[in-house]
Image (cartoon, rainbow, N blue to C red; front, side, top):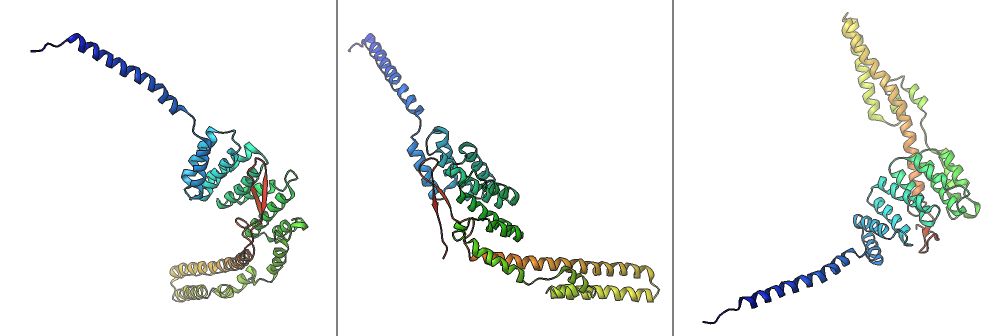
Length: 323
């Protein structure tokens, strides 16, 4: 029976273990080093742009933020910050969009993307229902610190915003303040000419509606709300008639209650008729503005504006025309 050299096995085993240990020692640093390598700027930015173009705005936000974190001095960092805001905006996250656009403005001041961020910040404020904040942003762009075309674009936005707030007099002043050389570009003359038509819109006088309400339902009938007029006439008349019958039959307590009910219907008819006149006028005004917007470029989408160029601090001018 052959004998086994235990010393030989032990030596070979120890040598094998030492070899594996040395191999791992050589590989481990290189693996750790590879994991610590910074990501590639072009790869991150390209992927973020691809996600944005595909409408994957959640991924786009993550990748644009990652790009800015790793490469804050890259010339494309400003664009990445702006696209972060646009990604939030396109998702309907207007509060987050405002924060992102403000970050661009704070860091870059008056560059192309910062100016565009101011306009988009105003649009985001408008979507949030904060018209005052939107007007504040646009008014800040009308100062002499900005190019005259930027000022005119801001005046154009102010005009539409005021028009939608039913302040057509101030809106007209904003459109009129656009430089004559660019009034055609912004269709300001056409808008101003159409604003004169506001004086010919059909209107209902709240005072007349209140006077006509002396006859229950008369004010509603004046404002075109026939069903409300009928209901007011029937209920007020019925309550008043029932109160009269109650008093005539010496049912004074019941008569008093019914008289209060009749008075409530009567006063409610007067108040409601006055409100109906205001609503009639508001609907006429809003319908006019909606028709005007259909015939002119949408200020949020088709307005003349700046498109930031590839070089930091440069802008290009574009004009979209609706047919």
